[in-house]
Image (cartoon, rainbow, N blue to C red; front, side, top):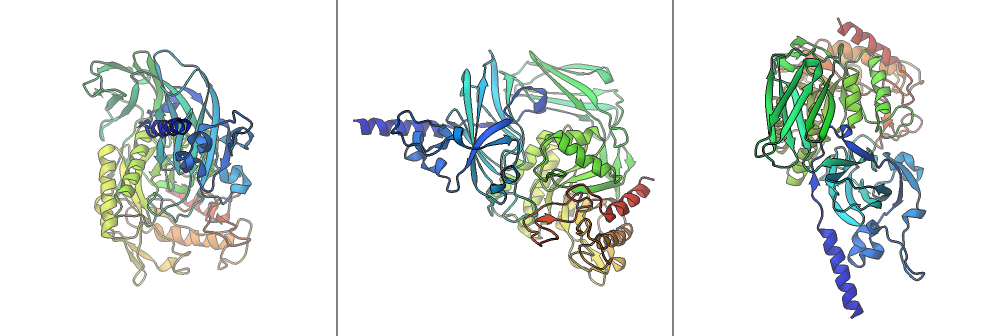
Length: 599
């Protein structure tokens, strides 16, 4: 009888766990909500064989690490204990937070205890800014769901799982690389594992403003489009939009889908630009719920080979950057981290950042907007993806949609990029064309691009040919003349771009160890990198329709593909700054060239 009861109890536990809560859309402007931070001290331990998840079928109470179980009798066998395990500050990455895990790829379990007081009539969401790469989330022992993708936010409605007083959340985090993932097995940056961005409890109304969009109407500057989406399909709900700086106060009524929209005519906002990053205070009110934001208004478009910001030609004085901190070389995750990198770029006369090769954190986007830095935002469709796998496409599409949803109100973002250096094939073209079409459907107010590959030159003439030209607004490509090819031939190179669209050089450059000096022909010296930049900039300046450049890269960053002792030491050394913030000689070359491009 006891065995039957135990079997029934186990079956009930497994069944309860299998009824997972569905992931809900991450609310727009999460930091303007009523939030309780779960950042701080989390206990963790490594589970190389993933025993704590897969062995639950035998006995979830004992072996399911998500249960946060404790012995009730001296004879009880429980082979884990979060309370006695080490702790880590979240958000962070385990590679730099625990030196034993520097190269680790696999599963780590995290647990956070927290007190919670329920609020009458409110629902509570559990929000993660990002977890790399796969996260399975449990609250008070109940599985909420699984999220795949390491750089975009996700959340669950945990209202019915939380209780008064002490609660716990457990997350199984797995950063192993797989062929069908996005990115795939091979990529040239550090695979930082962990809960890498903020974790929040978000208290919302029973029906709340889930999403909203506010931007200029098309290419005009005299009217504004506004749209709002409630969390439930409820008609007749009133939402009031207020923009004091524009003397706007309008109320809309939701339709049967819980949506409402309007166009506000005869407004003349100051236009956001790098020189004048004007942001307007915005307030939305729905019942007892009030959300505040700061939003800029600007237009971005192309005209032939020109790129136009607010109707005027602009040259993008850019640089690529990874989401890695200055000095400490960990995963960046806060506004202060972003401020340092933005300041370094601005000291080089930059007005544009290519955020490589994945969505960066929301703090970085907002800091760039406040400081007048234009942005290229990208998803990690990198090198050779599983082009024919529907699940891989769905993964990429989900990351793209989540990126657009989160950042569509940020004036700084002018380009959605769908890929980087992808080898040509029919399957690839099909995959990427669908992504590009979807991006344009979701957000017709921004430009679409991707970092293309250039095939070898013939008689020093490079001709770009890519079937994706018809799906992008801006032609962008990476080239490494002087580093990976034609070391001494940059002066001879010519470029033919057979498309009537603006051109951005999305990558170029070469490596140098900061402080290593020698002949200009000696690799890894600052003098070699300096010469490479001078010759490349002279070469690129002759390209018809050149609308911007993004040299690779702002600072040296960690990469497992770069093991050369005493030079790389697992760093990609193509930075214009060292990882410790020291300027290399090429920095001054680019700064001078960008100074001329201001005129």
